[in-house]
Length: 391
Image (tube, rainbow, N blue to C red; front, side, top):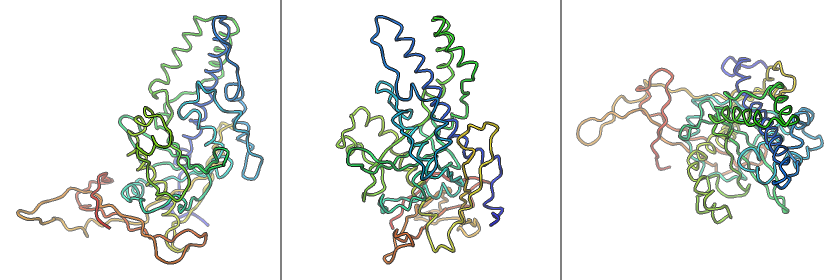
């Protein structure tokens, strides 16, 4: 079926929707290479306890080739070969290989989200939705946000979702990874730069090695030495909400880590509203009236080793339009007339009291957020605030 003009995507837009995934992988490869050289240099000193090279420090260069040959139904990659040592296994660098592997094996799909639809989903709470009721379209997929979600000076524009098993009881986990917009500024190490690092090690040119080390980390400092952030939650019948700091402490997370995570809880609430809301939006209504999922192949890049060459992109648009003329120009309150600025009134996902859909998930209807005073918006503007209403 030929995509409509509204849902069609230009090659440039499709490339933008998938490029962040490959940029994140290249950043991970470079960091593993740098850490490997640093460990090798430290091992030369007789005063240091030798540190073994294993996991990602030894095998990172093979990960991309394995990803290019994995597919759903094939033998799974032994992800333990790409784990970082305990002294480096912090933050997203330790989680990224598992997420990229799941995305490559189970779907290679990217949802490109329209900014207007994203704004509406952000204003639709999911408190009455349970994690095991979410109709995830794939075991792993990515979502490109129409407008970045910000925390302070950091902006995140891509989310990778995946389901995994953890522990001896094989407990199901829901993993959400956010990639920073600043990854677009990262320049990967060239082959010549990598050869310079190796030459410095082989020739014992430690002064030059220190200079290369300083130059590289000057380059990644603007990225806050971090490509993004992540959160993992139990896949159970609990509500699809962000855990409170108190519940995180009860689950065994160190208090200092919880204090850092607490700053990001409002951001994660927005992320869950968008990703979970997107899944519900794609399944709301009857099959004949749902948003079409038109998957278009991602245009191949000049780099044959890019993991996104075989990706498929679906543009998800807002099927509702706003008529400013239908909005009353003034709201009367006690006393003099008072004009309100444009804002959202929150919506909700109403669960129907009868029946399930064709896959056994509860049927839900989207009670959409209301755009108040749309006539006060400029061309292309989207309000960010909201006013909660009782439902």
